[in-house]
Image 1: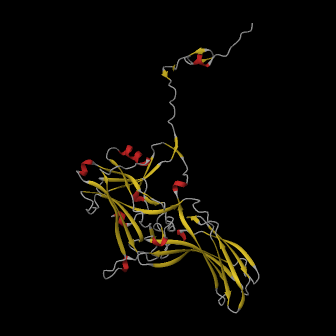
Image 2: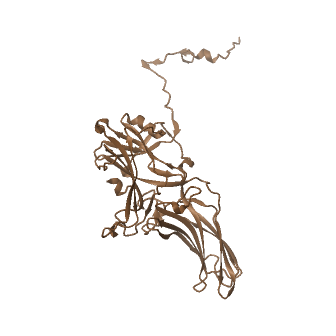
Image 3: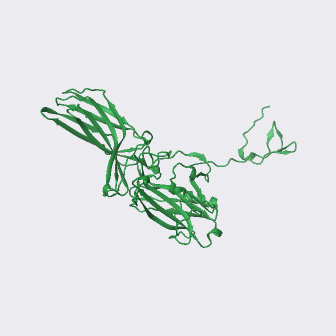
Length: 425
């Protein structure tokens, strides 16, 4: 006799006890209650929030910065924001103020004699941030911090004037200087009755912050190109040199490839070629200009270029701060000892404005190509300007990693190799 074993619908198994070889058994085995494993905690693919923490010497004021740089997007400047934690019992009616001062040092402190000073300090911002700071548009990082730190935490947001100069440091050379040269910013949070009071070291927190400029990738499709020519006395014909760059905007660490084309219809011979990346610096306070070579490459490949010959060659140059240490006058966007220091970015201005109207220290770059025709004939030189900047972090997608949605990574600001003496006072 054949018996059929029809497929039992799944809904019949919903409340049926588990079976093994047709024998039913309960979840309790040998007196031990077996409970099904709990579901794993949901893991989200998000970016962890990294904040920088610093506490006042008396331990009463603690600040957390989610952004430690004023970011100049040419059209607008993003603020420095974070959270300040201070006990109500310690305030006793006092308030917390945020003060931003900029020190413009254009000479060594060791050279100051007879009352002559080579620095100027300006107070750009001084505003109340707690406990009555008005309406603050909180970021996601600030909301997480306030939720974690409790009722004594207040959101802070500090803005700079639009015409504030960008942070630029000048290398003091092998001799160094007790005070950093250039444009240095200091953000200080302090407790006082009035903002006119001088911040006291005991109940204040100082941060060495910067104002930096970013450029979006693909912001310019321009391909710079220049053509120079030279004639020689009592000699017919001319020597022609054309230099081109594939793009106008380069990011720090990105190699710069310059293509040069030589057309020699003169009677002279080119003996060698040299390509350089030149940094041009203007100190507006003293109206001084100077230049420094930050990358160079000399080649004799394809030389000599005799009369009637042509040559096309590409030079690859990589200007970085690590190979320009202890060179007096090199402009940087941080101290040489800092891990995140780079060559100073090119000064950018909004459309319709002149870069000569910028304040502080104006920085620009150019590729310089020289053709050496000997001591008597001299050199043929071509300069081609370009921009060297940081990419905008908002346009660069950071890699996501598995982390909890409320994950906050706290780093002590005093451990960073960025602080100047003004921020440690």
